[in-house]
Length: 298
Image 1 (spheres, rainbow, N blue to C red):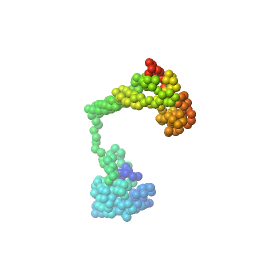
Image 2 (image 1 turned 120 degrees about the vertical axis):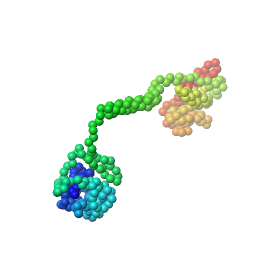
Image 3 (image 1 turned 90 degrees about the vertical axis):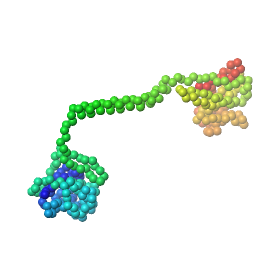
Image 4 (image 1 turned 45 degrees about the vertical axis):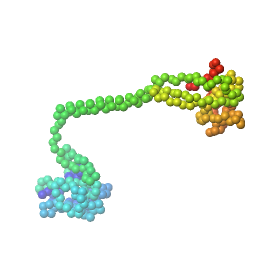
């Protein structure tokens, strides 16, 4: 019986070695029958030998550093059978033992395997890719090609429709602000003008309802009212012009003061008296009709 090694990966991938009758040595060292390059470090200098004993090929490990495996099992000596997978170290170069070389053929140099006769199988963690002769595959029929074309077109149409449907909600959410009616300022009643104290600020809290599409929310808006004669009024937004904090009226000093950052304002004019605020208090439009004070809230 004669045989050959078909190398599946590593530097020798795609080549075959006829074993013949002479012993075959395998390793990285000089003078080996099958020599791997120096950078194939998982292979030892004198890794393994294949000899012919009693008409059968026997694989012997030569004390290699990473061992020799046959069908994923570590061996030191193993009679080879057709189809055995030999690995020179775990994860190292591998070869398939094929016992179909004609009788009388001596060991030869590397012979490239015709690419059309090889197919590469699935690689697993336990075993590298397996090379085998591929059977003749008939060309696909016209019916098969038509079915493939239809499936490709159907997949494209379905994918496009799915993308459009998924994008509609996002498009609506993006465009909705463009068509949303602008909020208009409303005049809100604060009370009878005669009821406000003169010379000191009066704080008023206003419950405001805001409708956004089908969502309705209620919020509390505060303002400060100042008047000297109950005829002319100054009404200020109760938020500091620095960072929007609420400020208070300090009776001892007679001024508005923000407790957060120390902003101070004149209750009569809203002017900044000290601290970090960049501008006076925001003054809101107001009017008196039939003795009632109104403020405009935007």
